Length: 158
Image (cartoon, rainbow, N blue to C red; front, top):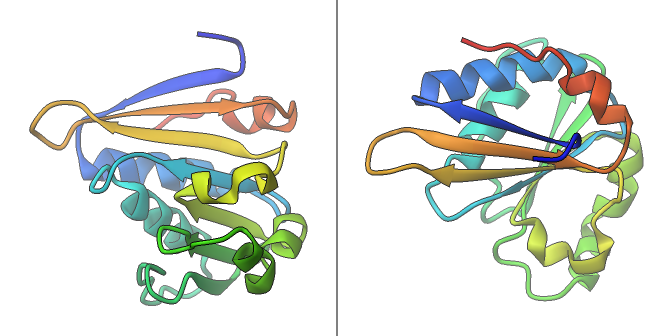
């Protein structure tokens, strides 16, 4: 595994939530997290947990499967959660305002393969892989931007 890759072994949805809660206070506007994995891998659960940790007041955090984007007022700036599964063309990414949000908000993007070449080079790529038939997951984080080194250093969860 390279220096810009970190693997997390998550044994339950609660551990996934704990990891999201540990990462949340380290995020700032302009941070983009791209979430990949098969249907049911836990992308929405991780995103929802992270968003709830960033909100001043808890609120319902629905999946943006049909709306494509949901926005929230976070403690350190706006939060955008997008699910691009139903996207048919990259021009729709621009119409959603997502490219501007990459610079001004904390963005969580499910199904980032739909971005093609529009994915920001500074993004944190997270892949969730089910590991067997139970609730265990392997989460692999990889990045090119040095800003993630500090954000992921000593990241602890229980």
